[in-house]
Image (cartoon, rainbow, N blue to C red; front, side):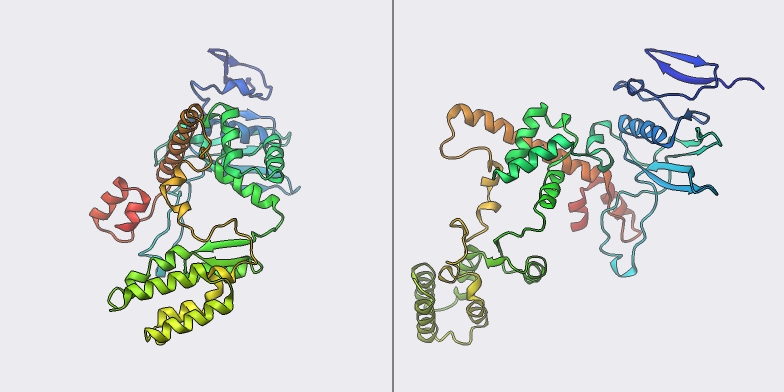
Length: 389
């Protein structure tokens, strides 16, 4: 029986081996200028080496990968495995969500390989499919979940910074600078946040400020039952012209409510002033004001003095353009620091846009109908715009 001929890469040349030894794929076999393609008959000393080989190949080609299934022999040891592109498969949808489909990365079965082990534990690739029915992009490989990880050193640094009270975005910025750019890190800010939240060991925030969304209020009561939930004062007061713009005494109503909110030193003073205002302007039957009064403990400052909030009473700041420079500069930033931080802020913005582009690139919202026009929009529009359509 003749010896099997197996092709491997060595330096810059292709070398044929005529021995029966198992192929050992060193890390330098896979280079940035190309990737060794899986071929039927290629051998590996164990399942882990096979998995690492296909993962490196997927990274170089620009697609996510995963183990789709495996089988065990009579001895309970895995002897057959299928590795696929993570976009393999189809997601099923319930009939009641047909017109509101959610984004999915799955596009149907295509690229994959199967491999099996022999009685000696040597793994051999049996079947290979290299074609994908979607685009691939090596520059986006670092953003796929299968390629993202936090090293032990990074985790330790996050823990120390968290204990020291260093804001998360500053830890992220420091890590990016230390690595020499976003392209050199193996995680995204979301991974940072998830890990830090896990390090909190269930510790809830002391206070949360939101608008008057009922669903959010119910969720906070369930998830953070001991957290003080307050409503954004700015959102409430900006509705006054909408609610009372028609009223003949609107100016007096606006002034009275503002004075009550900002000048009341005690809850008793606020309640007396509120009763006087509603009686004077005949507003006792106004449903919006009645609802605000019933929930006065969520938004009136004098009811919230017992909860420390660092002087914050609105969410407006976090929703303004100030967030673009948030964490990069302040009133004491020098001109030289401004230039440096401005560049970092721009790089951060570009990275977030790149990640948003990656999300559009790697996911899709299935068509809800069968019209050709809808399919055209699905291809041309971003996920958010397509969902609007």
